Image (cartoon, rainbow, N blue to C red; front, side, top):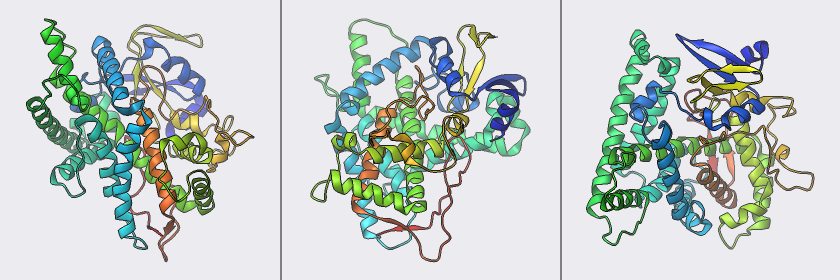
Length: 442
């Protein structure tokens, strides 16, 4: 990582110039926790990608001030009501998606497989169920179109790179310009899908005011505000559409890629796969499926997922923050409007806190008595503060159930005659891995 090399030379907090703008890089977890934990550092600078996907400063990820605060508070409350805080409800929603994927794997045992497309559908269906009370079968044309558009947005984000900080400069480099134009087209296609979904929900909104999903709840809130004679510009159909986009972007590709990284590390470390299977056999047994109630007793499974998150570094720099007020840190003063980036990669690879950091070792997250470490301050897969990932609890539930059910039903093996897979990352907005892992189930 180039920024990590720069940090080793200039220290744990330094400034880099991105064209005519400056970014403050934080490569130490204490600094990240200090600054990102402050309310005055919870702003979000406008970038080209945010302008294209979130209409500049709408939704939750990119919004500011009362627009962000009200919608974030409402969204957290509604999602908790619909399952984030209810294990039984989430068990059912996630398990349906996992079992659909398992049926595909069972039908293709001992055959080389590309997990990607089916896994994308399984993860996206969990979010569709919570936002729109729908799930789509694999091969559904609408789901395929949506998935293609969403994946291309992620892919093209890597071409934008530093140009997102100075959008006009995109026109100087043809590959970035073409990527930006594709993002515009795909963002519009995604927006159209969500707009159609909103119209359908408006036509079928329960007259009793009850809510079956997030869209119903938001539309009901708007109707109730109108009935009370309130004029609240922070709640609108456009805002709702962007929030839904935020939920899908935040909760789909990151979870999908983490599961793919899990499979990769299982292929690379069959002895760890055997330990995970033994834990599932001991805690769950063969007579029933794993449930979220089992998670608190499956320490090694939790530690494995945490180590995958640490070493994969799905979002190596998270998302940028900016200061809404002047900030003083370690004797340095940063004016209002300063942008900050957390070098999560450095935090997760610092040998001072992670002995032999490049080694894959779930045991580093276990206490001497075998229990899971609940507080690891240098572990920041979801960052922290008011801008902490909205989908953290959902992601952890999905990762556990996908992996636990996989380990109960399958053994992942490399394809005969194929070279052993390597844990190598593919860059972009989100750290992924190549499509062809060369693996099968048995």
